[in-house]
Amino acid sequence: MKYPLGIQTFSKIREGNYLYVDKTAILYELIHQGEVYFLSRPRRFGKSLLISTLEALFLGQKALFEGLAISDTDYDFAAYPVLKLEFSQDEFVTADSLRSYIYQAVNRIANEHHIELIEQTYNQRFAELVVKLHKKAQKKVILLIDEYDKPILNNFNKSALAEIKQVIAAFYGVIKPLDEHLQFVFITGVSKFAKMSVFSGMNSLRDISMTRQYATICGITQQELEDNFGTAITELAQSEALDRPAMLDKIKHWYNGYRFHRLAIGVYNPFSLLSLFLNQEFLNYWFTTGTPTFLLNLLQKQQYELKDLTQFEIGDNAFAASEPEDINILSVFFQTGYLTIKAFNDPLYTLDFPNYEVKKSFFDSVVDRYGHFNSGMGQNYIVRLTEHLNAGRIDDFLQSLGTFFANIPYDLNVDREKYYQSLFYAIFTLIGLNVEAEVHTNQGRIDCVLQTNKTIYIIEFKLNDTCDAALQQIYDNKYSQKYQNMGKDIVLLGVEFDQKTRNIGQFVRADG
Image 1 (spheres, rainbow, N blue to C red):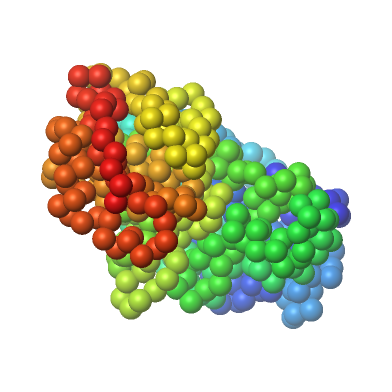
Image 2: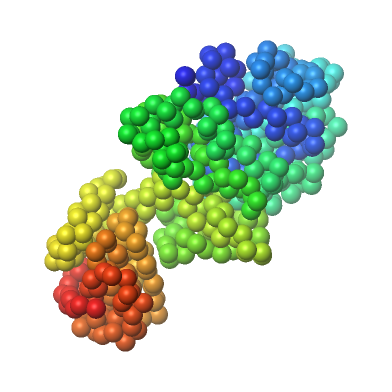
């Protein structure tokens, strides 16, 4: 089996006999039920391959689709002129670089079709190309746009953002008057940050990002996994000394869980699955393809409490498009793939991390960022913390915990209590035990319950008081009461956070 890891061109996959998970039945419905679409999906989720597949369909490359679902339909594979723009091809650090990219892309396509253009502005030149392509081919034009929001993401929270949005809006503003020249339009992106203003002139645009009918248009379903990767699953099960059901459960735990409609089935990130079967090893694949720098910046800027990223309930309005200047952080986390729909209790959606790969990798990055470690170094200390806790070595546990605070700059320009709370929560999540955390920001304290196989640790940190006061808080709030009949030892820890050293100070221990 040849796995098309990193290959986003449909013709290369088909001609090279790479594995292709057939999505053409969905594309048949898509083409026949509308003309102007927008689809938001996380990165590395198959958007570019989807665009390439549509390109091959509309170019009439029938031979590439032999044996696929659409070849058994009445689709006629008629050839149309195709205009494809891929905004993932450049960095776009300025508005001028974006104008230049569009201008040059239009020139390239015009030269390929031997069309002479006279308009001088990037957007009017684009409009002229569409009109002349239609006239020359005597068929309406197919417009495919991949990663429309790349210029926005590259300039998130930067001074160039406002002008870049204007450039994008002016570009899409000329599309609506071109309706008589366009047969089909498909636009993809990671986010819906600027959908409201950027596409304001395209009132016929249909957003299918969260429609049940197209919820699996990108990604791999459980059935598609078992139908297409049978041999690979068997080989991986043998190498891991697991039976097939146990191996399927492990794959699902690591990589499944994305849902794009409240009634839709979950899907796998295709990049992670292909990487797993190619390397025959369970690792973090998707997260390493792009550090979520702008998300971490957003978390720190808004001083968001990390515990609210899990099992959080929101309404429909949180999924709506928003402007980068007035962004809903949970919407961003959903659109970028770090959160997904886990449940629906009308009218509220419950969001959580889709799977183990995303959750662990995200908190690894938070620990490295908030603890000012070099990438990956925080994981070493997490392993030590877990070992100390399992062995009951409280002194060593707290000493290792203090390592995470040693590098935090003294002149940190944020609310320190919330900063520490975020770091504590990320650390305890990564320990991988049963963790409960309750943050009381008005008094600057963090309550945490950690469970090992034998022991329950109830920990209270005091940022502005003594360890004795922290222990008394545990008693006063009766934190240990609910754990009394679980058959485990209970250890109470009152821990003082020393303001002078900005680190773990004294602690007091008691049996619960």
